[in-house]
Amino acid sequence: MKVTEQHVEEFVKGYQTIVDEYHKVNGYNWVATLSIMYGKKYARIVEEDHGSRSVKCFVDLSNGDILKASGWKAPAKHARGNIFDESQGLGAIDKHGFIKYLR
Image 1 (spheres, rainbow, N blue to C red):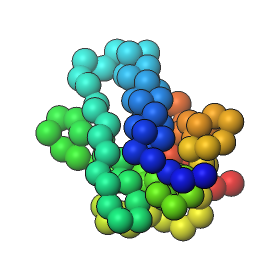
Image 2 (cartoon, rainbow, N blue to C red):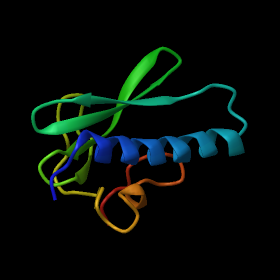
Image 3 (cartoon, rainbow, N blue to C red):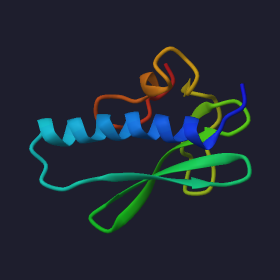
Image 4 (tube, rainbow, N blue to C red):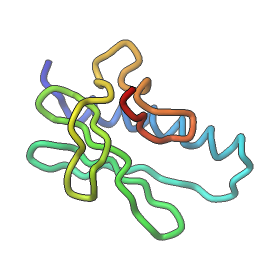
């Protein structure tokens, strides 16, 4: 299936819900906002809070794989999930809002 911007936006919308819930449950009084930066091969999912930005993950635009960030510019190897799976990729995210490590 071809990955569209709408697919990535739906994933980020669900991801933002997880982050918001974690902040609410733990009584944080700031908002962490997720945004998308599109490249040729990957969509970079970026979190901004307190004026700083960090990469949360990458989405491979060729197949929908969710990849943990290796750094600002590149994803780590090995998919952690896929935006087309039964959880729409949200199973790759832990309750703290981080991409899960491989087991």
